[in-house]
Length: 184
Image (cartoon, rainbow, N blue to C red; front, side, top):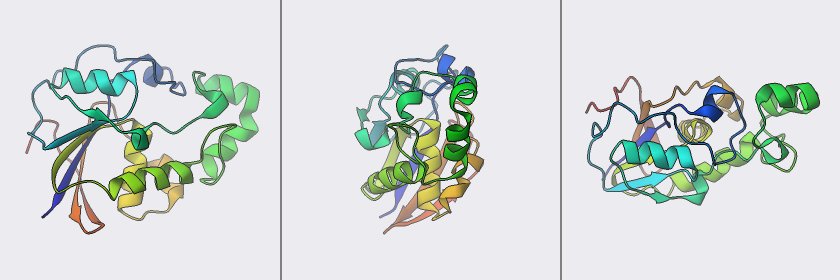
């Protein structure tokens, strides 16, 4: 049987708008207009954090939180804006954004998050799963599923409240592009 994984990025909120390293507490600005527009799913999973939970609820989805889908841990940079970190720790930030093996201070590397999310991806059951996940978790899922070099991680743009679909079985995934939120 085939697994269908519909990955939904959260609605916009203060942390996304301000390019802030997410600390899990910031929510969304308003309920998405696509409420009830998603297909039925056998499983619904969420990244930990308020904006994924609030987005799922606004879309009429109730799910379980999966620790493996936590956002990339920015360590000491959590809660700070990209501009603040660039001003005080620019060299480390540049290295973190260009070297997938470099971890933020007391945080994790892009390579680490891709491996963590890849481990979760191997456990996705048959049937349809909806996952409301942070943009970096969605990036890591696509990088791992398509066996892309981890250096492509930052080159994948994930707009708020969009759907990305993977389908496959036995560890072989296909990416479906251009899916409208709420369409089949």
